[in-house]
Length: 151
Image (cartoon, rainbow, N blue to C red; front, side, top):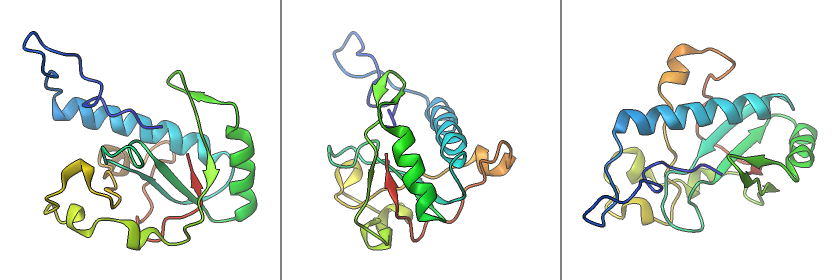
């Protein structure tokens, strides 16, 4: 669901992707995070909202939301069916995983993962501006224990 602007950078005259300024990437991500948080919060209290920063096909752009109440997650899932975000269909499903701590790359959190974006463990993209502002209901809950809805 998350489209990292680095992956969609236009090609330069040398045939290589153009550099995207880090500030632009972070602003894009935080706008995305706020959009998703605000939309999902309509269905109930979110305990966690995590976005994967991986490049591997099975993780790229995945968003994991954990609601406090299972019924709220079910309502969100039903409401997301047939919806689009940024012109692309949202593919939401329940996750069979109840605790993502074991699926999260601890080395990434310590900035030491040598596998980069192709690591098979989740690289959870951190949030910055939004949490500092604490506006529009976008306070970032703790990352540990994420489970629930995958969008």
